[in-house]
Image (tube, rainbow, N blue to C red):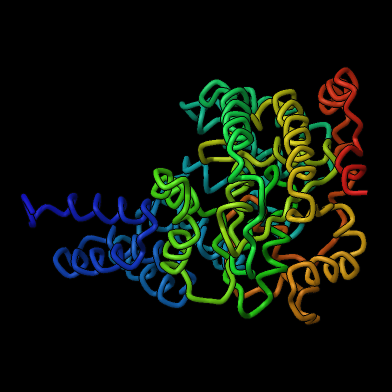
Length: 447
């Protein structure tokens, strides 16, 4: 309003609307700005992001390519399209555009990282060798340096050189902790505060379940949640919201009424993304709000995913999470501490809410996929379809650290993988032993 000729104002407003989960309004403003500032590539790029978020990949690709035509040498524009291409399963296109980024800017370290996760080290020898030869001294920031170290670790892992992979992985996470210290105390305190508060309010004691609409997948990162999301998403009536924080918006708006409007508000926010009959939401930290999901929403079911603790911890340690909230994952001890805490709080919620939570064992899922998937589909009340067995064929997108794995047929290659990294995994193993935590605790909980 103050200055309609200033493109930055439009840009900021679009970003705010995206963060408020109001994609339709964001599209309207971005379209207006695109027409006003026709040579500014940023608005086409934002339209690509928004259409990607709401699952309209044809429109997303169109606008990403318009952005690239306006700024063919812009690192972030090219990288955004490469990341989008990987999310929808187009690995070849992703590699092509990542190489373009690195031609323009050989120090764009996040491009090396994404390449390290998707290349075939036998077929892509040039890229593999380039990553291995990178020298840390050529990069100035801790962020760039740990990006390179994580990239090297991925390459060594693919070459089955696990000792080298573990060594640089430790260096990478130690550097990452300097920039992003562990937040394990904060996440445990938040979850405990919510648990204590809801335990004192009897309105949180009883399930309000009426019929299914909202499926929440929760747990620790890298516990199999993306695979579960992709399996459920094979149902044509399901839209995968991914790691979407719309529940937090709805909780905030309905807090004054003791969440009486939570169900209606959550539906409003989910409808911004899709009008399909069902949605999945795999913001994993939603486990903290299980009392709200069960007692305040009328249409929700909760799936808690878990796997062997040492495999889970190693997978988090290797993942290089970039968002806010998982900083503890760069410390194996803090991750072990958080794993034990989640077991304790989920034991409490299982006892309190009985059959309202489905505990899904990732190891069993990948070892006996049809048996476990049939059980899950039956619990959700869906009719059986063989397509559930082939989630890698999904037409939906996956923009998480697991997107490479979920584009492959279900397999158990990662089960027991921690043993290849026994040198670094002895530390959390001893922590579990010292705290009398059995490695099969979750299995015993559901048995």
